[in-house]
Length: 219
Image (tube, rainbow, N blue to C red; front, side, top):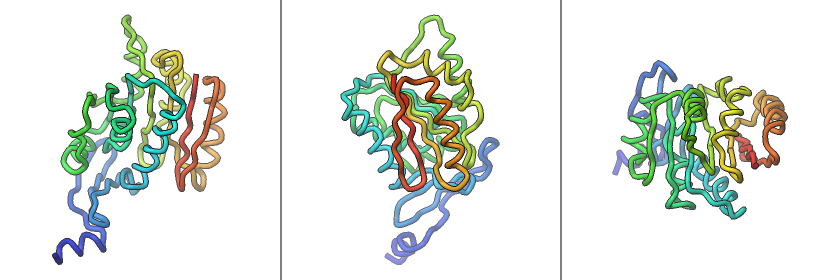
């Protein structure tokens, strides 16, 4: 009982990993639930679960058919759980550059319980480029880009080359969702990024949360 109360009322580090990609990765217990911290940033928890449930729910409300999903930046699988909730038959490919993140997700965040999920340990930028160059092109109805190093989206995911790969991989009525931080200096970065996405997609819609901005690119 004392142990349970301690976990519930305070944050306690229960596991640490060292990674060549992200440095220190911590699994902490807060309010009796595990949280993942990478580069000092909270990467999972109820807040992000609510964000992704709302986002995928919005895709569902539009009546979009989703059978194939590409998740770039799988992390703990929060978005995968949301997709499973709204599209239980969808086939998912989750790409994560950091094997230690996957280890943490499988040990502490029930990642292995997501059905129809294929995991690829790879750089998401390079993975998308390889897929886009295949002769038998596999297309996706929904592509999620939730890739961060610390508090920054790697430059490769904001490049014209990556945008071109996305357009090749999307089905005709497909959707891309970018997760972008939206506080302090990240607000101006997001505004500039949206202008670049407007050159690629026919329609851009936004969903604001406390500290994040989800950017939807619709064809």
